[in-house]
Image (cartoon, rainbow, N blue to C red; front, side, top):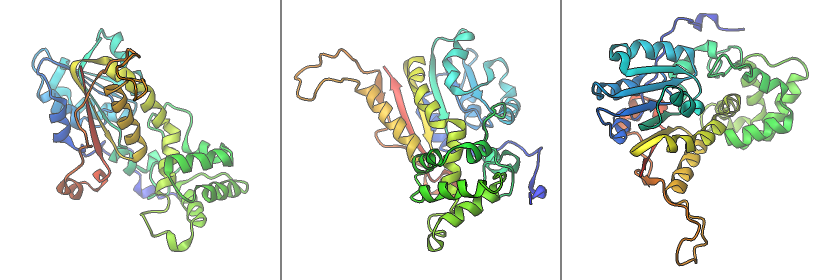
Length: 321
């Protein structure tokens, strides 16, 4: 039964800005520069960027979540015409900026975490903590939902998703249990899925490593929103958008995202494809810039205590030549 008492359609969009000071410092903001936040959220990082802009500075914020757009619009209202807010997926950032006459920017920020609003609002169906219809769409204009994935994907596809995106050692058994249960009736809610996942994991291991549904829910959310593909397919555009000495700052929250970003930054710094034994480079590929953060910037102990959801956050920074 759905816990309707937990629903709040008017709940405020809130999201604690992770690594806020570290990100603002890493962006190396120029007062007359142009900056892009591809995951605007409630505007926490954006507000601090805009505070540092002069009269000629400009800020563009992109988000696909309608609630985020509304909240950020209110939060950034005082900055007037310096700010443009666009409802879209950040994979389209280069296109939407070009449509507005912007060929290059001085800094780009991506905070890839799911917002507290999305996690805590039962109507969004992201969390295993409430009994609510399966949804997990970051953009509610999208047709594919978590319910569709759970009920329509074949067993092999479910296994691959849970294994690769959730990194769950019980992926095969979880996929098998999902398929068996939906033969009786469609799986409609988060609690129904919780029960199936729990039944697929040995009892003595359910209490180890957090909630047993955590990894599967993460995997389904990533698949529903195509998060890793969007990230991979956007990184080169972001590098190409950067003006000289412009910086790209990306905050990730799990190893899959971080690995993509780390490897891409490394390739942009050293794109040479010549065999190591060659005395000189003959491939002609030149570096796009340099990695500023040799090791990821992580939250302090105080930050983690203040915001437990920040524990897995990692900030990596790249500067364009």
